[in-house]
Image (cartoon, rainbow, N blue to C red; front, side):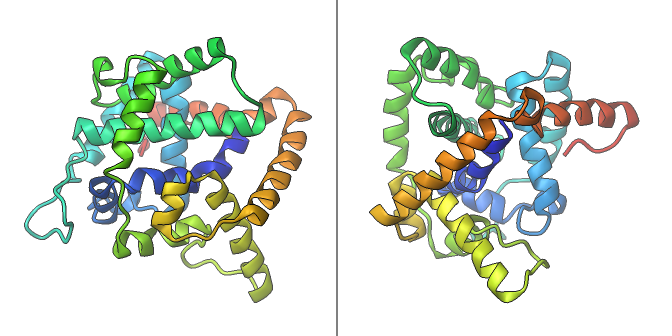
Length: 265
């Protein structure tokens, strides 16, 4: 569902809360893929990955994997890195963490805009979430066997979560959707940023709110719940094609880019 994009900034924060992922993204040599400098292009790449991983054909997955791998080949720490930890974009453990964040975020979006899953639906959703990790280098056997194993993996991984001052400063504009070089008139910009801070913080588990030092209380939770209820009502009356935007269109865009030789990422 396109409405899932509201949870995008929160999911970026979750992914980059793993220090090696955070510094790998911050120090990336792939200029065109930097979310802080090219947010629209980066968003297209990320949303296309989600569309390909969950609904793409084998050919689409193979094409996108090759393109992502070419970009990831340039992302690794060296003697010039300021990172306190080593990183490499081909690290299967880091890719597993990113895939796990995407799956976890998908579950939260489903609960928010559709409702709680029964066991059968939850198991199916979990199996369908595996390609979020395995579309790149993660082998299937690394994906936790079932939802119980996933919760164990998730809770253990939370012990490695840490957002330092440098990564927090990098992530805060993402949290409030502050786009580089774009500014609304004063009051509108403040309302825009307040809206996105509420949405982003609402979709974050408490551990990540604490790491980002984003305030939260029962009053903010009530505002978030009311907003999501209104958006859920609006989303439910949209026709199926509109609800799936932009993910359905991005798969067609991917095919067009392959045919015309344009960059995929």
